[in-house]
Image (cartoon, rainbow, N blue to C red; front, side, top):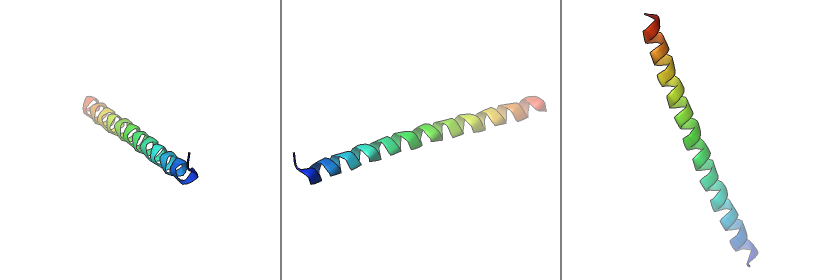
Length: 44
């Protein structure tokens, strides 16, 4: 297999992984914000 081709495939794979991690972190952040909202409302 051509070395440059291997590098591009690895970069694409790494990019996909980064996107998945970002999406995962976004979901956690949203969940955390929703949790904080419910906590504030229950305090009142």
